[in-house]
Amino acid sequence: MTKYLIAFRNTNVTCYAKFLTLSAQKSLVHQNSVSNGGRRGSDRTDGRPMVYFGMPFFIKDPAPVVDGALAELTVRSGSRSGKFSWHLLRKARVRATFMDSMVGNRCPESDIDPFSIEYLASPHAPQARLRELGPVTYLPRYGFYVLARHTSVFAALRDPENFCSGRGVGITDFGKEAPWRPKSIINEADAPDHARPRTVMTRVLSKGVLEQLREDFKIAARDIVDSALNMVTLDGIEDFAQAYPLRIIPDAVGMMSEGRENLLPYGTMVFNAMGPHNELFATSMQNSAPVIEWVTRQCRRESIAATGIGARIYDEVDNGNLTEDEASMLVRSVLSAGLDTTIFGLGHMLHAFGQAPDQWQVLRADPSLIRAAWSEVIRLGSTVQSLFRTTTRPVEIDGVNIPANSKVMLLLAAANRDPEKFTAPDRFDIRRKTMGHVGFGFGIHMCVGQMLSTLEAEVLLEEMLPRIEKIELAGEPVWRLNNMLRGLQSLPIRFTVA
Image (tube, rainbow, N blue to C red; front, side, top):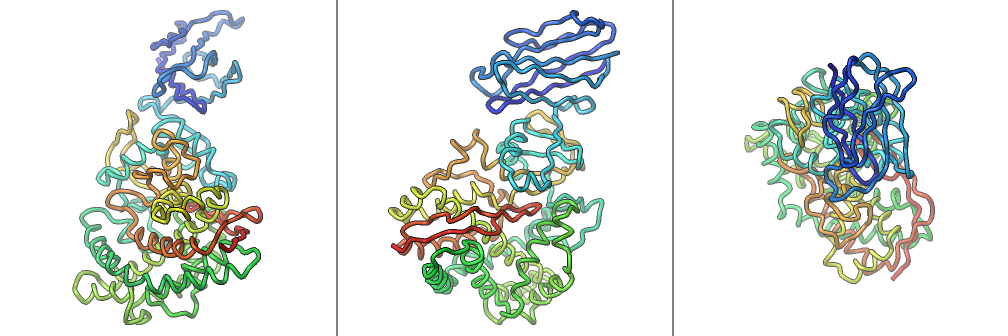
């Protein structure tokens, strides 16, 4: 006797036809009939058993929203015959996943490739499909599980004991393969090892320390806006979102000016390396040796200025809280938080306001919404699209079992657009209550540099609001594809002087 699970999906409702018991000697029996009834049939000319499942069978919706959709499954000799056909009535869009070996945990499979060029170029639709498939989905192409619903992602982020980071926050399991680079002592460390460097970074990036950077950030923001307003059109990425952090963050850390152009390809390489060894990874690793060497050298104590964030980190070495190597890694962590993800975040900000000009007027009328606006940008844009965890023991998520030692992708971007969490999640709304978004992660591994990123955006917006009347898109955006990040390569825009 073989058990199967058929999981029906459409864009509005979660539908599961529960377990079936299939036998070669008996007609198929629907063990959990639905509202309009499962019925057996023997009207096939070849005599093979056949079953129809009435729909809808719904879990989370208060009422059926798809009516009259039927699915036909034919089985030979009590096993899967390979014939799997669909009848769609009333134009209902229905998908299903056919499971056998994983039926016991009711986990659907999907052939979606979250690292394909097609997916990365336009991720929202496949992310929605993954979210709809269930609380957990298995991707046999890579052999890992995906959590795409907000409740599932949030549960994993707040459970570091069962979903560990120490075996890598990318696709590679450091428990099975050696990492190509030293592990991050912030993002890829578990308790109790995680607490010491985290405490150091919380101290180094405290509110008081960051406030000391505000004036320098203001000067840079003023210069960037001045330059932008002198252009008829500009590239919102190269001329604005990229130029501003590239000026202020290396200065804040205390890095030398020469060679800063290496910082961007280094970030691209690091985040691509968190995915599979695909074309994006190979391209970013070309001629990587001199870039890695330069960044490594610049993060050492002898290369860091006597004042600034970098110097504060190395002060912790002198106080016995870090080793020299750990300090160097933490300097690199600050650069990543303040540069790569913030550049993409600022690009998302310009794009969002260009698409929703009414929201720019709302913000100009009420600048107290600046932080709320930035939070909404991070939620909607989700610069960091996903992170990985590894299960330390068998784990259950909403009734679905994930085995121990499994890689699990936490699809932050899908969670941030979950309609069960956020009303009209695809709409940019700076008045939205964004509490609970996972754009910066959550829990003990929540982005340690989020306040630095927020300060960068806050100061820039404070300079923009009184001086820029309108933000208009002046051409088609070009997306910069990365295995783990989502951001723009170029964004033609126009600013209207206030």
